[in-house]
Image (spheres, rainbow, N blue to C red):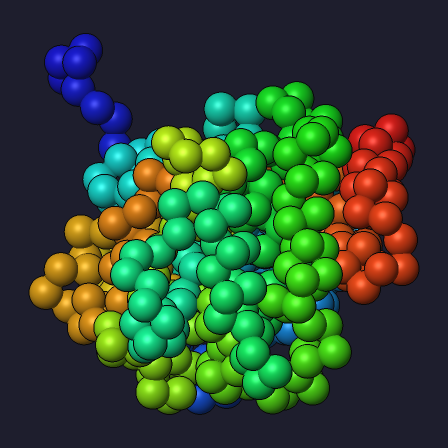
Length: 403
């Protein structure tokens, strides 16, 4: 053979050699109906005609990390794991994930923006699977009634509009529905900040992180956001209940938006969170679920082949229909029913601004466990915003020190 010929990857066709059971651990799908659709529309297509079978374990998002750690300790972590975006550095601190060969993604047409949270020290440790891109959703009908002709160009303008639209029955901006964490992360990006430095040390404790939190505190102080109006668990978010004029929404909210009668452009407008300063880039928050191969996998080549299959056009399209998530392959959206999801389409149009991604440090897993409570303490006036940021920084540094 020619010296320049490309070797055949060892994973190619691995599912047709031998046999056994592959295991999958996921918190992506919450209800049995979605899990069954996922099995029928996605999983079975890979295992039909193969001597391999799949045993899938679904858990809740709040139990996923414990399930992964338990598997690591017991040396029986599932072959395939679906962690949230941002977890790769923390899991790699425990040597949990196997490096994915570049050959697996070479022909998949993945958008590079979606690989930000998948690489660790120049190696691919996970693949983007079900991505959420969060934009500001606003009630375009309320904007029109108030004579507002265009979205805000800066954060100051957003805050002024929120105050203008606030009434006793309507919050101008709801930072609580999508979670204070997501709102703060998006604002951190709008102020030009980052969570961590390139070597994993906290960077959110600089001026940008404090300003992002103080912006939310300011919304509460001027009445545009009200913690006392947070709905009870299981109730619709304020925006979906038409009790907020603006909030962060992601593509996975599309079914709820449609059910609330907010799908049409006459009721729902979308824009990337504006920058703090005129002329700077806005921010789109990128979160979601990744697909990874465990370092303890007994069938790594079959797992790699499954990853390649799962991000193929037809299986990924089927999965996106179930999850309403943004597929990591924008090429499959045009001409499909995914194009009806306006948040998904607008998110892809603004994907160049989706540079704010959770993670970037092994310390993120420890910070993420306490971030919501620390932010809420500042927003409800229990402690200064500077104390919340300082506490989160202390958690990050302690995590890094302890390894």
